[in-house]
Amino acid sequence: MLFRSKKNHDAASGDPGKDAGKDVKLELERGAPLEEAAPTPRAKGAPELEQATYQSGPAEPETHEDIPSHLISLGQSMGMRVVRLKDYVFTQEVKDLIDRDYALKYQVLPLAREDGKLVVALRDPHNFQAIDDLENIYSDFRIEQVIADPADVGDAIERYYRNDALLVGQLMEDARKADEIRQAEEVDAEAEITGTSLSPEDAEDAGRIKQLVDLILANAYKERASDIHFESYENEFRVRFRIDGVCHDRESPGKSLKNAVVSRLKLMAGMDLAEYRIPQDGRIALRVGDKNLDFRVSFLPAFGGGSSLVLRLLESSSVMRGLEEIGFMTDNIEIFNELIRKPNGIILLTGPTGSGKTTTLYSAVSVLNNVDTKIITIENPVEYQIEGINQMQVNDDIGLGFAQGLRTILRQAPDVILVGEIRDKETAEIAVTAALTGHLVFSTLHTNDAPGATTRLIEMGVAPYMVCSSLQAVIAQRLVRRICKECREAYPATAVEIMEFGKDPEMFRDVMLYRGRGCDYCSHTGYRGRTAVHEIMVMTDEIRDMVMDRRPAEVIRVLAREQGMRTLREDGWEKVRLGVTTTTEVLRITQGDAA
Image (cartoon, rainbow, N blue to C red; front, side, top):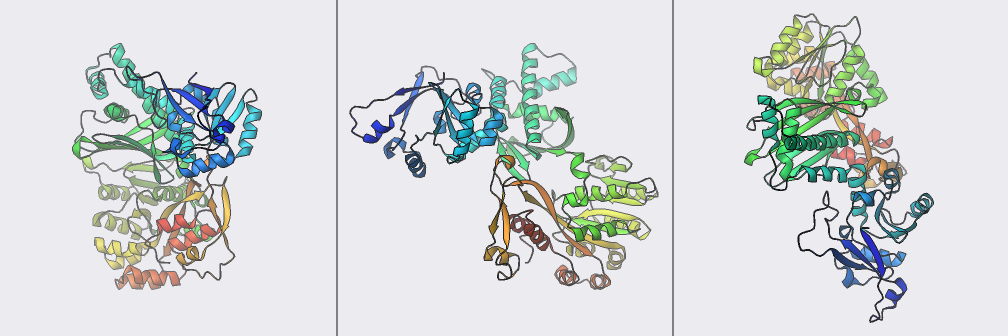
């Protein structure tokens, strides 16, 4: 057994707390702290056992110098001993003491099995119902609850039960060589270029690296990550998942394996393994369970020999969605449906990278995709293939850019054209010409809000009269995180929150808003999934007059609001009132938006 307990009778101590509490001395095998991915071998000559003493009942401060005082107080008040997770070696044997589903449901971490007792720490020490349920489920054991830092307990549960850190750690340990790491890119490159077979040792190494990479990608999919970041530095190899728009650190294979992992990913993506000087793009197809996953891969060399390799998970189910699923309010859906059914003109979507513009564009063209409508797209790159639509990908290496591709598309007599992005004068003018000659054109533009799109086109060199004649509407879009439906709770709105949205606190004095308390379903973030907020500016005669006069975006914005345009922040406020998202989220993504 990894953990053994024995009674420690200290006759010299006159402390009644010790007598009442019966000190317990844990004898632990020397091993890695919980923060590490896997146990490290004991150093040669090191003692076999390491001892650390804890009390049940009152705890002496000098015995717990590095334990926060509030935990000591909590242990005293609850009559439980206080422990440090870093003193425990977490192995597969320990992990198997509690079933994964129960560990995640009750947020409980097993620490040891001692003399018929199952020692556990809870993320919420006051969750007595969890202890009662565990005693019923594991009736062969007597459950002993101990106090540990709740944050450490939660991190450990996420790491070892949700993310399979023990398996990842074992794979990483197996992949390391006793003497030195064989560089995987050399092995793979030789096999790829010369066609020679690998030695049994090299084949085993390559298999372990493959299993490790596949596991990381599978975990990213299970956690709903949209992007996976592999970042190589001189003394560090970092892995991060972007979940609901926010990056989270995940277990790293370690710097000694960074070359092997990056090379494996480059090989899977069809990139040049030997080229580390220039950026490269590729795609990876991977099957996880019964699901076929597609990743868009981007490799970026960094100064000092480092690199950034980012995988974007592409799921067709995430883009083929209805407008309500995207986040359009009912009145905006009516406006949008009317716009996309116009026979000609340009409809622009604006927003930063990662704001869901592609999803909204694909949803629009999917609505129009039928046998009597010819639709052609030009994209960089084509992220999702849609049946019934002709899609063309930009290829700068052969001189096929947006402008050149758009000229060719016009000779194909389409009804609807989707241009991935308007980024220069030439593309803008051709798109405007297409709209003026009877085509409905969808495209994107990088501006902060909807009114700014008109001035941006003029700054590109498009004549104001052509902007007025062709532009039908501009839609600004941002993504906000949704409140977790499993732990959503109401609370009274504060005056500060209400004033941030330009509202009168007296009018909303009794309004209840919502937030996520944090639970297992949302990984204790309070959020799960994302939705969009919108700002739709329809071109009216009055707005066109302002554009012709080259009026600034701020002036156009005032007029558009007077005519009924709801700003991003105002649209976000509506979703806050409905309990879809929080004030914090809306304010975060609309910092430049006036209340």
